[in-house]
Length: 163
Image (cartoon, rainbow, N blue to C red):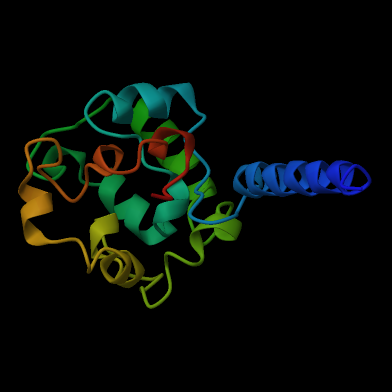
């Protein structure tokens, strides 16, 4: 008597599983930001920290950041002119208010596009989403900084910031 219902139950379980998997893989779903694909950006930026998705900041932020690399958050990250120009072109072409609009628009809510912050951690949406993280967690030896996304978001390098 249960036999006719078994295939239906298996089909429902399989469909549910694939809906979850495909939902996560769908670009733009959840907290997805297109990961850096440019090898120069990956090498130069990613050698010191996570190469953040350009879709996490507006063009104005990337331009200001690239224009003052000798004062890059307390470090001298100066590069030759050609490399700087190439990296800036990639970042601005894929910024949250240009090519990365489909991914970064949620993160930019409430932020200025004209004078955007230099830190992703200063965006109103970022602050709101991380407001429940207790102060002691930011000081944990494996975290140490609010900019250390991969400490909590294991798939950050692949663009996924879901917990």
